[in-house]
Image (cartoon, rainbow, N blue to C red; front, side, top):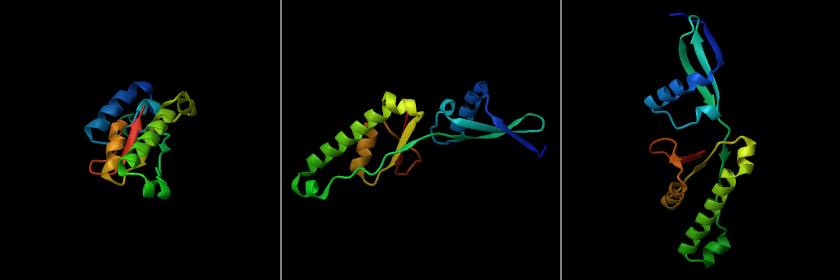
Length: 137
């Protein structure tokens, strides 16, 4: 085995193989075709690994104002939270977000009610058992 490594941009035809390996090893979901991907290869040209970077939006906090929380019933809290969540999701999926080159967003979820919201938005849990969720498009 050669110890010298060459790092280069991944070729478009390699992305499928790299994605299959990512899935097989249980890494989180990313869209490699919309990422900056670099591969390492040894002196013989054999692929040794890869790394990928994506642009993302971080969506937090979602805050309900104290005065509203004091006067409104809990059902209104959830309506407000869902309305804010859906509005931000729509904005981030719009042409404006697409134009920026961003292809996903993520958020950290503190409680079960907010977990239901992110699941309704078709977000996926980034790590099993974790509270970070992402939406890819």
